[in-house]
Amino acid sequence: MRILAGDIGGTNARLALVRVDDGRLVHGDEVRLPSRDFASLEALLRSFLDLHAGPVAAAGLGLPGPVRDGRVAPTNLPWSVDARQLRQALKLEQLWLLNDLEALAHGLDGAAVETLQSGQATAGGNRAVIAAGTGLGQAVLYWDGTCFHPYATEGGHADFAPRNELQFELLRFLQQRYDRVSWERLVSGPGLVNIFEFLCSRPGAQPAVSPLAQADPPAAVTEAALAKSCPVARHSLALFVELYGAEAGNLALKAMATGGLFVAGGIAPRILAPLREPPFVEAFVSKGRMRGLLESMPLHVVLDDATGLRGAALFAARQGGVVPAGGPPRE
Image (cartoon, rainbow, N blue to C red; front, side):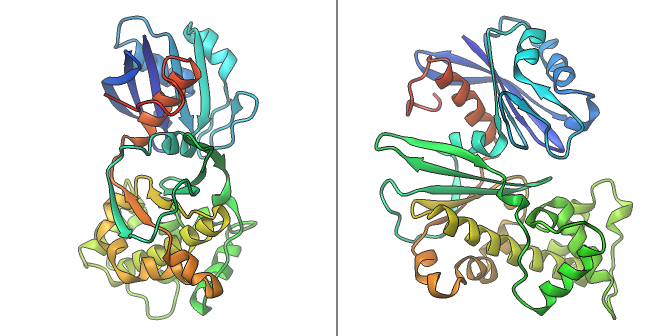
């Protein structure tokens, strides 16, 4: 049996054909395509399948945004997706849509991570995942006594809460731009650019780069910050890291993530050095009376960028009954 697996982001889509061999998943052909180059998810998937001959029985596709009744309008993409219509159009026996962070959570077991805080994990304790990329995704996993069950959230769209005067100033700046300011407006690729523009607007700012003139503005700010070639970019990334840590701690509290908090997504591995510095973990644990609880929670950065793709395939295999719940994720 072959499964079409997809990890569809607001910027890039990763697709792979996965073979189920004696209850284990064996990954085959994989490509990365620019999501916005396609008018629909169907067009994107057809472009992949046209180049990969052979029968495909099922598909598991992780997409950004809430999936309800097999339908989703992906966040940051101008698409509308209906699982039933897509399954019929592609002539597949089975097709499942799930939130991209839920898919990532399904793929966590076996993923390469770097531990920023060891903590004292509780056996069977809840886990949580936060992932900044084009947007800000969040998911939670609970233990039923046999295996973890992920569920999606839209926590990245909760209201931003400033923690000091500079952040209050940042909030007021963004309130002039948006009807409301969510965490995603700050902790994401576009959010990093928002922070950079805010800091450029302050008296005395002297930016050495113009990211908006670049093809990939968030990458331009990040590169300038890591190269230490622009003080405003360095300050932007430092503030981004602090905000990322604070919201990761918020999620850990809400999920009671005594089994660990996992920082994933496309941005985290690129800024691993700043995440290792004290401000990120300090922002994570700095929760007043709950500080001791946060200090006990393991904190990891997911380094494996195929985690979401693997999770989407595993979800489809489990839903199709060819891999048992809690079964092996891959060969």
